[in-house]
Image 1 (cartoon, protein in one colour):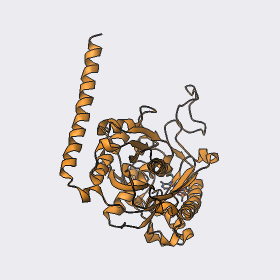
Image 2: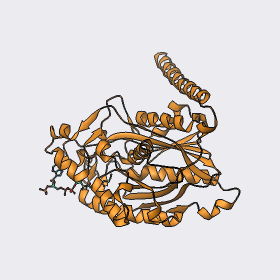
Image 3: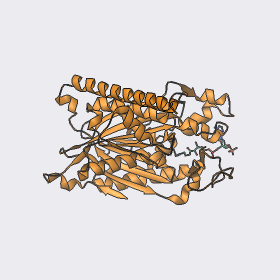
Image 4: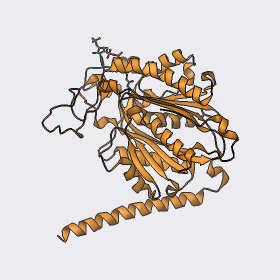
Length: 385
Ligand code: UT7
């Protein structure tokens, strides 16, 4: 699936564009270093860093979940955008580590934010999920069906890792990143995207789980791996990744009518620094134009692109009118690229934001009180039976 907002349409009066107006990230407090992992599986800091670029990752504690990390990132994004949760029309959470098949993580976040006007759903496209979600939200905005969307990538990969498997347990970490897209008549924003899948590679990277096939008597998933644990054919996935990152960025650039050399910053899925180096070589782009923070976070799957985007903004690596390329790749197999032309005046630059901030806090408090009231009502109901 390839989409383009057709830059030629900028002249028409009715044109709508989807701009990023808010962003936020959240990671657990607990850091796990390579040396910490070397204490329980046969590995070492030198091997992990040389092969992957990773030095440490964040690991959720018991009370944290994919939903709590998503909620914290979402609140930050609402602060930056300076809009109210009730202004949101749509919430998408891209994740492979939801607590439930349903209710969705997105519905939990919607309730906690008091985003009472928003539809909400989870999206399963593994490490490409965030770009898939952003594309769906941007298209809905450009079509005129919605005005504002919250797109989150959130994961607690630590819960689906086999901690005895040194080939995978060194790679992943937990975290969440969120972005708010809003309609604007200012040209730019999401210019193009390319979404792709090759299900023939399903066995190369998977988390088998009990779904429509009644697996109660099976000890393992279809690929022979444990249920609810990640398995990966690392070498094969590595080759696939280096191929699709460059190919799909080139395709998205063509659709956006932007030259590859005019891309100011690539924000790729953070799986392995060597993949980024190979992709940069293939594209003929200097590696300094590739945002990389895998060293500090490891691979946070669907969360890695929005976390890297937030860090790029914090490090002032993104300026108005810059062309940004996002690229995700992983389980499915699935991959996705997107070109964004950055920049729209933030609402907070036009209005005072103190009142909105207070309104947001009131909404979060209302949501908490409503949850408390529901819990009490359920307890009273069950005690009366
Ligand atoms: O987010 C989804 C997308 N995921 C990716 O893009 C990941 C893509 N794959 C990779 O990043 C790399 O394949 C890995 C980092 C997972 C592995 O790196 P590699 O260079 O492909 O190593 P390898 O699997 O070929 O293993 C090389 C050697 C093996 O030993 P022998 O057979 O050569 O004696 C492994 O047993 O390294 C050994 N090894 C380790 N040694 C120390 C594997 N894991 C470890 C380890 N510590 N943690």
